[in-house]
Image (cartoon, rainbow, N blue to C red; front, side, top):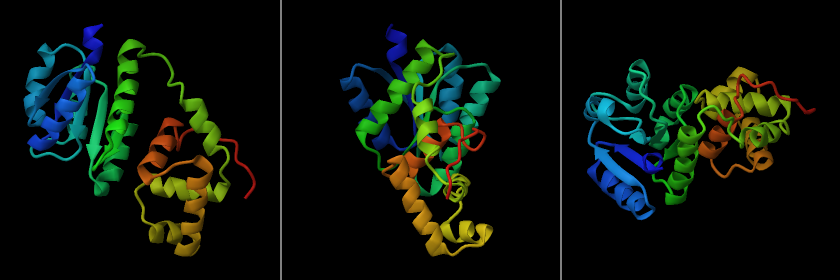
Length: 212
């Protein structure tokens, strides 16, 4: 259905809006863009249902606040947040609040398109469990208890030194565990690792913990 291929872009950067619009329209999406969250929020009640791509940091209202306002108004727009590197903890909060994904800038077009497919599935089968969840849980089950603790620190947005202090180990040891986590899960970046953990339901998910 056409409404399932509709995308709304909310970003105060005109260049980002224009480039994303051009890409998505070339892939068959019907696209509308907005320069601010309040602008989109005013229009949202009269808009056909679609997926929302929003910057996590914008003047007046950020992407996380926008999502909450939409929830309060019972408006269903599956959300993908766009974030700068320093905004990863905020993006994690957004995903825990129900966002489909977060994409770090500068982002690859493949990442945006892949996330949109997941967002579209929320519209076509809102109650269906994400088929990637079991695979994500299986990957995290490969981690040792210490590696899971390091991953929990990364999810909290903590730097290596803070994680090391909390676990009473050296920052170098944290780096080693972090590298092992990346290797075992197959994650190619911190943002990909965080997406994997959140897809699995971490930190609430009950995992089978392997020996250290």
